[in-house]
Length: 269
Ligand SMILES: Nc1ncnc2c1ncn2[C@@H]1O[C@H](COP(=O)(O)OP(=O)(O)OP(=O)(O)O)[C@@H](O)[C@H]1O
Image (tube, rainbow, N blue to C red; front, side, top):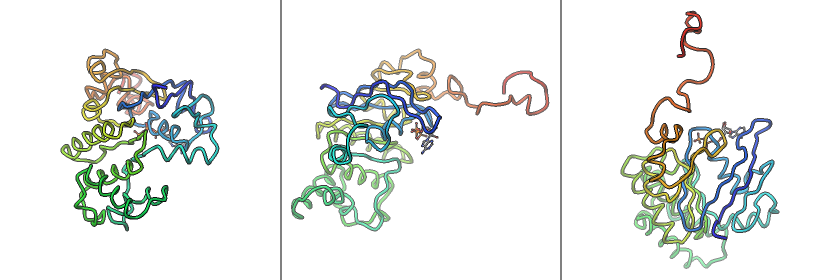
């Protein structure tokens, strides 16, 4: 199968509130695929459905040839070992050193000898440029460095699929660029596939092979970053050019300003 993940006719609701409706997405092996969209458009929900933390009401989420919603606990556990996940604000364990943080998944999921784990951890830390910070605590490193440690931890088990949820959030421009380049380099070095959920157009377009734009639980546009940059789709244009108003309104829906000020029904806010 050329795609490591295939989502077909996926519907997901929280209670009776639809979050994703009729989603159809492909994530080809070896690629970096960005999933972009406004706040609340359902991006994180997609990652949770791929990871099997959520179950859809309808449709399939095929990962490596297995339909995730139908897996039993043991098979899901085995599948998750092949997935790396960098959560939003990827928190490190604060009472552990950098080294221990990266060693954690290896200790949890493998029976490897301590010397081998040590070498693997140092190699992962080397890949993110932090081998010499191994003995520091998270409180002793910067936010950008902490994100790189979280990256090293996410790839500790050499996952075939890596999911990043807002990996650039809260980083300064230099750390953002460093993190973006690392995501691309690690993906290519590991021969894995990366799914990148982000708001950040520049960083995401800089490293992604393909981009999905999501709005209100639906894919509204898709293509290569180059195609998206020249897209005439109003939603994509609003997003790419950071315009305040467009298909995604600036104002929370409701009464107009004129109504609120008692000026009758003249005009929009
Ligand atoms: N546990 C929950 N129960 C009910 N609704 C939820 C729950 N988690 C998320 N939602 C709702 O589901 C919608 C999609 O959330 P999701 O986190 O997938 O959005 P997102 O696109 O990742 O947003 P952001 O970019 O702000 O993180 C949101 O409207 C959110 O309020």
